[in-house]
Length: 98
Image 1 (cartoon, helix red, strand yellow):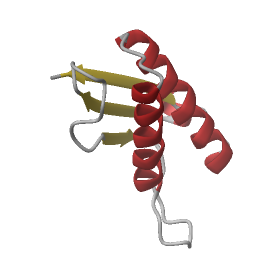
Image 2: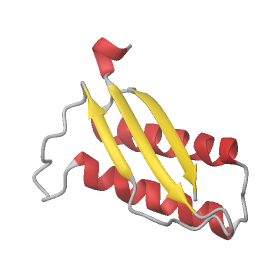
Image 3: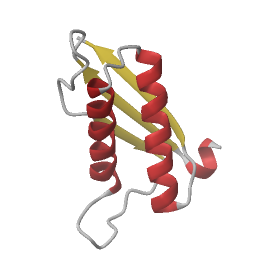
């Protein structure tokens, strides 16, 4: 799976108090083509927006369980990647509370 579709690591930092996003998410691609799609946005920038939206929704819904947030991130990033590239890379979300 890794050699065929690659790996996406998402590192998100949230507040332990209210679950809001504290820092910009970090998206690391390995074996996933990142190329520009002609509209001026790269896959990394798009995925950062997806992560920010997911974290915002989790904070609004008062989801405080890290495993639930990681599952939501995994699903949203995988869905966006499939729609954009027709690939299913391994998605590894890491959520850090501060």
